[in-house]
Image 1 (cartoon, rainbow, N blue to C red):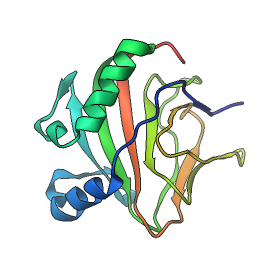
Image 2 (image 1 turned 120 degrees about the vertical axis):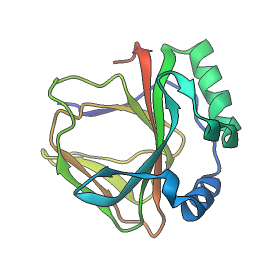
Image 3 (image 1 turned 45 degrees about the horizontal axis):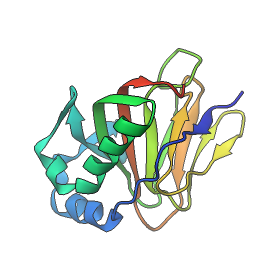
Image 4 (image 1 turned 90 degrees about the vertical axis):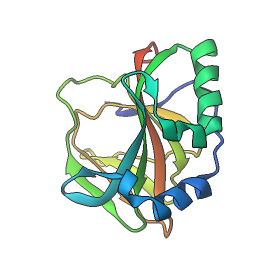
Length: 164
């Protein structure tokens, strides 16, 4: 069974060093994503269909959202957060949901070199920077970041995603 597929979306180009700077200097903005992985943090940039004030720091994401809304089957971003998994850290084995299909939410890689998502059937998926992926997270999986740099992704939940 396929658990990960690349979506036909435009490539997102963003300077990950800006995110590193915000993370290093504003850790109070970030919340822990999962108790068993305290080095996995995130902060919201879209909530309930509205951009948060911090979104003004990311015009390249705003432009990308406008582009995918106009030219793809992704409609009405409802929630979006920037996810950081610190260097040399992992997210342990877990299951996110119980429906055996791809989520309408998707992940866009900002910086994921030397990291991967692995499913219990031993399939490993490595993301390419700037590309977007749908996942079936009803299967047990984990994330390993073997890099000396933080792993940075954008996690997007649209109202509609025709690709899943």
